[in-house]
Amino acid sequence: MNCADLKRWLNEGMPRGSERDVGEHAERCPGCAASLHAQLEIDALLRGEGRGRVEAPPRFVDRVMAEVLAADRSAPRIELWPALPALPWWAQAAADPATVLACVLVALLAWRIDWLGDLARLAGNLGSRYVTQPLGQTWSTMGLDRPAVTLGFELIAIPALAWGSLVLYRWTERILRRSTRA
Amino acid sequence: MRSNLLKPGPIQGRSNPVVPSISESAKQAADEASEESGWIERACAGDTAAFRRLVERYGDRAYGLALRMLGSPEEAEEAAQDALVRAWRALPRFRGDSRFATWLYRIVVRRALDRSAALKARRARETTLEETELEAPPSPDLPGSEGVSRRLDQLLGSLPEMQRAAVVLYYYEDRSVEEVARTLGLPLGTVKTHLHRARALLRAGWELEERRSGIE
Ligand SMILES: [Zn+2]
Image (cartoon, rainbow over all chains, first blue to last red; front, top):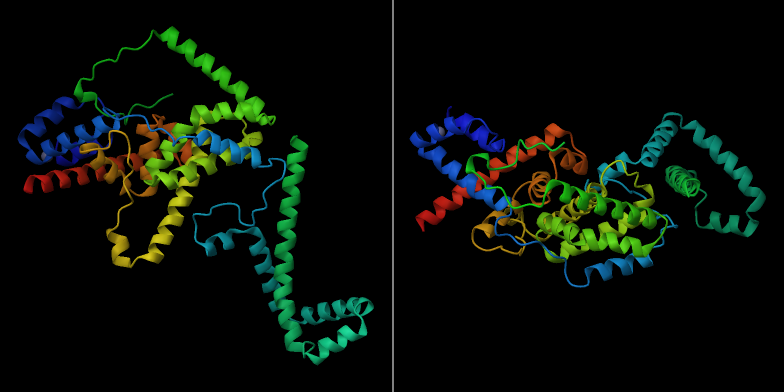
């Protein structure tokens, strides 16, 4: 047995069978003898010798139960990004299916920009039936009917709409899954 | 099956502790398990009194696990409380294919890791880079935490999070390597590697402290 073997044996939790070789090596190698000594001390502590049991603070159970009673289990929590909160925000956002869908939509629209015009015309036709004349005038006075502004609104609205629908879809799905189980 | 590969101390000649006869302790364990599955079933159906029994049984351990992972009693209490409330909400989804304790520990570990990440981000914002590098997580004020015990707690606090979680679950919570892997959602080999590296780091830190105290 050499120094590296001995260190590996210590790291692996000192499996049975090599004790004699270890003892022989440690007798002629002060560095390994110190490592062995340190490991034995650490292991004694890890095994909990002389260590008391950790107790939760007083009234911990009561406080938990107060929260439990206040928590309505039937109502699902709306979490926009429910998983992996330990990751940075951009990684979470990138992993969110809604974001992915929104990105695909934006890419698609950027690729076929003429579709935006068609969509705007369609929205305009639908809108003109319901939007009153004064509102249209205000819109125009404020300069919000300029093509560039409209395009900007659309660019913001489309991914937001896609993301919102998917969140809504996932929420409904969760409620349905819960109600079918119950 | 419990893997004893990493359990410390075969060369120390450990004396066998006085334990009740196997049949006696097995019967007690079976009784406890059946009592527990009754509580779980009732709690699933919305019985908060049954859930209270589970909190009474596992509250200290959930808190202890969070404390060893986070180092701060306040943070540990928040994390454990949050985990238990989440467990209550998620209980109808508990399928019983792992032990309740393993399932609950998984929630506690996740909450503790999230809190730890949030704390680290907050500290990084509040301190300069140099200070962050020098700063070790606070060492928990645990029972028997003086002298060498305190030294070990400090070294434990300086381990990377996953290694710390693996050590806490394996040694302090006495989980098997398989259970640690299930709790942390990691492959068995990765957990073994975490435990091996953690032992090496703890030992290196320990030897350094020994040399320091020898010089002083
Ligand atoms: Zn050596």
